[in-house]
Image (cartoon, rainbow, N blue to C red; front, side):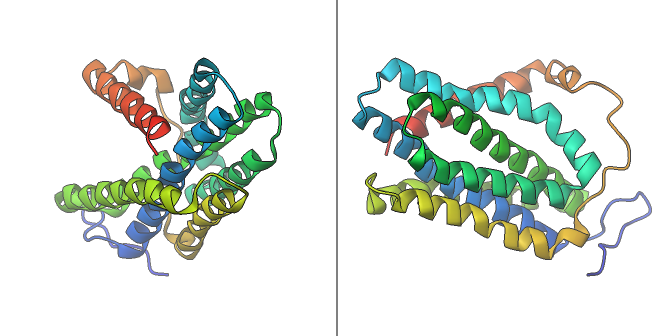
Amino acid sequence: MPQPTTDENGHVAEIHWPSLIAATAAVSAVGIAMGLGLPLLSIILEKRGISSTLIGLNAAMAGVAAMVAAPITTKCAHDFGVARSMMIAVVIAAFSAICFYYADQFWMWFPLRFTFHGATTALFILSEFWINEAAPPRRRGLVLGIYATVLAVGFAIGPMLFSLLGSDGVLPFIVGALIIMTAIIPIFLARHESPKLDSKPERHFFHYIFLVPSATAAVFAFGAVSVGGLSLFP
């Protein structure tokens, strides 16, 4: 596949649609699966008689996984490549999703939550990085708007699927895992166009967390509201 053309500053000169489609398809599939899975898991635990406190603690593993996965993701992308790292994350997320059904013991849901949300965090990070690299600066706002819209549609479709599939049996877990696995197709097709990380970051990951406190606080609030809402409302 041809590489995107660049201008004199090294930025891409035009939107490279295969890369954009690969990144947005990946994150939209994850959005659908999360929109389906988060309320599904909470309701199943409630049916099993697990207390609301323990359900909340289990859901909190999503935040722990995100904090652990975020600094590791860049290193994995540097060592294995962006596309390959994303495909590995897709497989881990899909495998974790199906394993929830077969995990009879409640304690098993904690490592599964960790692997599932760690993998989806990596997909979010790498897809946004890919999109930023694939879009020219003058069109980046448009591209990110498309990305955000597709992600929002994915989150909306997930609960709708939940209302159709219900929470009984293995079917909703299979559907969620298959939806996640579909993300691997566009990533594989556009793997030769994925951006390369030729050098490691000069500063530690945590430096950027405190670099712009207001932005960090806004993301924190968004994460708390979105995950909490999806976990509570089918």
